[in-house]
Amino acid sequence: MSEQQADIATLSQLVQSMTQLHEYCLLLQQGAQSFAAVLPAEWQGAAMASFQATFQQWSAQATTLAEAADGLTKHSQLVLQAYQQTIDALNTAWTDFSAQLA
Image 1 (cartoon, rainbow, N blue to C red):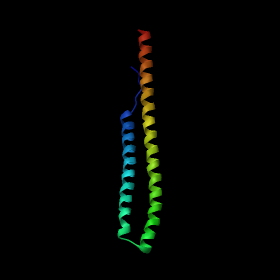
Image 2: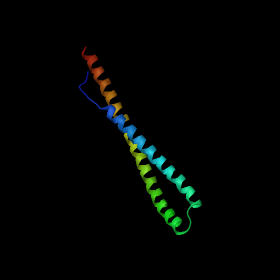
Image 3: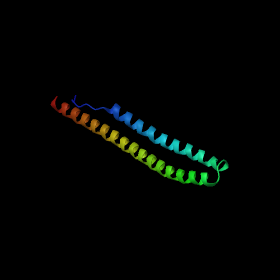
Image 4: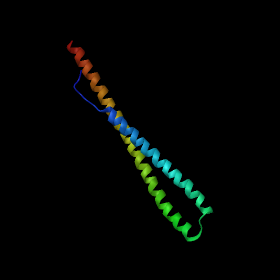
């Protein structure tokens, strides 16, 4: 048996956390858009114009945050996959080597 140690559980938790962050960003953005959609019935004039300008800025930044969270999610999934594949390859190599010695 090899002496390697890997913390796959921590990497798996990271993937789960990044996935949750991405989902939360999307839900937050959807909720804010739903709220903003009902305001025209309540607000008008300068207040509405100011809100719309501010909301557009916020929405653009929220989109950037969601895209960054998606990128982190995908990257963490690739890291986990590469880590697991490396562990599997090393275990196979060690098993083959041990079999040759026997």
